[in-house]
Length: 456
Image 1 (cartoon, helix red, strand yellow):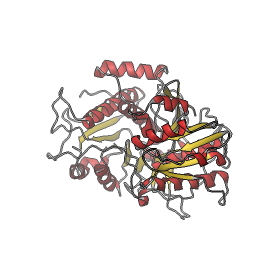
Image 2 (tube, rainbow, N blue to C red):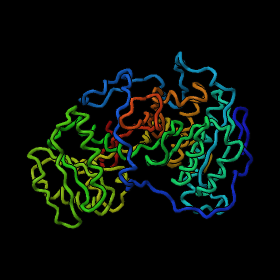
Image 3 (cartoon, rainbow, N blue to C red):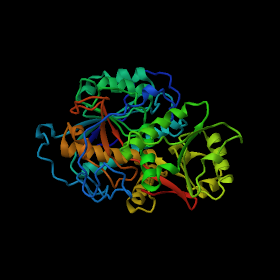
């Protein structure tokens, strides 16, 4: 790995720990126990950003999003917003130490013959990070970059976190696996290191850990975003919640019911009808259809069940106009006839969306291809966006940048938007220290003209 004038990488060989058998590849797992979900907690009301309505009523349409403090409308242009008066100048440093921790599996893979999907995912993420570091170098950020192979092992991660240089890290990106991430989160407690989790949506990774930042929104956040979009466009008496019978999915109904009460500011609001259906054709839909419009929200990621339910909804809808809201996993379903997505105006929540017609996206894809010889994946774009966002925060706010996260709205990036909020304990009166920070920005995508398009 080459050196540049502004940022320095570690030895060409990725730092390794003793060989350890790799774990099974993680996927998004939202079948956690209810105790894994974050409690519904009051939090300080954030002042509305310029052009944004106060979050006290349901907006008639999506909030306007003109440039806001900390907003970066063009990812190729650095943020130039002046530092706030309370920025601690003592946290600004001449250079910063950054670690990338991911399961590269250098102990098992041979360059040019990489077969592990997890290793490829890690490499593409790292390649995106490198492209962002080159850009940050031009902007004057000085960083020392250390790359570590966790080998998908929690014990290896623990060993790496105990290395002397890790105590001096300002920022860690990763790891990917749940067990490894928990060890890294445990390791930063009592240190000044900020740990950013790029992939994991689980809320049970750590607690009482304000230096832990979750980029991938949780299941609760997805449910809240869907409910908010639904109530912006439809009245609550047209909505039906549906999931598989005899599954844990019905527990997710509480997120929607609670958010309904919050958005309507009515704790006595009538409960939204709940349908728990079985596999097969015996699904009692007739009583749920409304004369004009019916909105089904289906918090299920079982492809067989979703396919069957969509077919039944469409065939039995009669004269009712039907709209269906689903989960982000639906974007990757392969066995559902997309004509049902089209005819039912299917909408899903999703943490990322790239507009391939955007010149900045086109330039990134071209540069990545020239560097790697392949088209960039969403992990490459994620690595690029994360490094740009957090690198600029380090440059402008210093090592204690996480104290300003809830003010530093980041839009205009290739892959996602960053809108971090503190998660607090239920019933607490102390809002000076968050349990953790979570990115709560989500897109609503609609399937139209046989492709998903951003609608908010």
